[in-house]
Image (tube, rainbow, N blue to C red; front, top):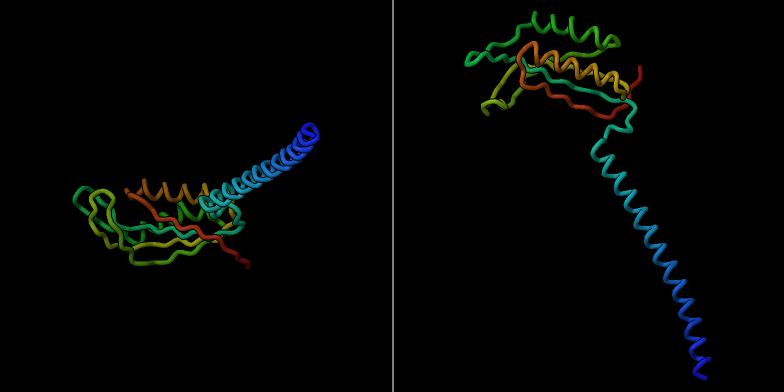
Length: 161
């Protein structure tokens, strides 16, 4: 009788072992799937414009130019010259420029600054070529007019003409 009990116990153990293995495999598969979904979510969170086909960009160009303690402001002819030489050739499909009043804090000394601001608005496809052109406009402006920064806001959008 002990042998029959032992055989029955072993058969039940084998069945439970196979069931446990299936449960462990199912849980492991679920954990892997969850990790993949979480990683994809983090990737999209960190790169929100990744899957956006059309975008709009706003670039904010301050006009205060510091030379040591002296601060001067760009005049309209300097801005117009920059638009004609740096923006028009890079964005021949079009753009809009608005004038505004900017408020910011200097990175160099923390002083509050108020200055006239030009805002460049561009609706564009999401690709590396146009993003490189926008980046080169920013770098050109910063070096030409001794600017600490140019604010760039990108948004996913849809447009048509």
